[in-house]
Image 1 (cartoon, rainbow, N blue to C red):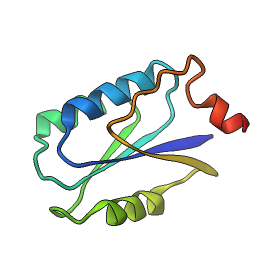
Image 2 (spheres, rainbow, N blue to C red):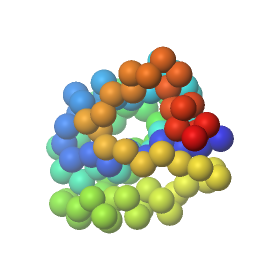
Image 3 (cartoon, rainbow, N blue to C red):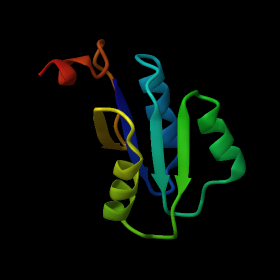
Image 4 (tube, rainbow, N blue to C red):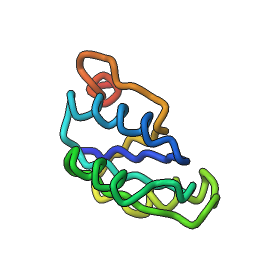
Length: 101
């Protein structure tokens, strides 16, 4: 079992698209840390509606390191995947090849 950790800075459309590609392959917990302050309640609700998503609004512009460390402190599984919102999951087997390596 693993969790997916995503750092973002105000790029809702990219993040939503990435989560949809993840959801097409798996239903693992997704944790998101965001620090632009641009996300509305509707944006956060839309992300949560994709299922098993936790969203953390960080103080403005704390930086990638702070967001990553915060997300790492929340991990509850033996493994995790740390990524950014500008990726797409296109491999037909999702994250499984990385786990098999």
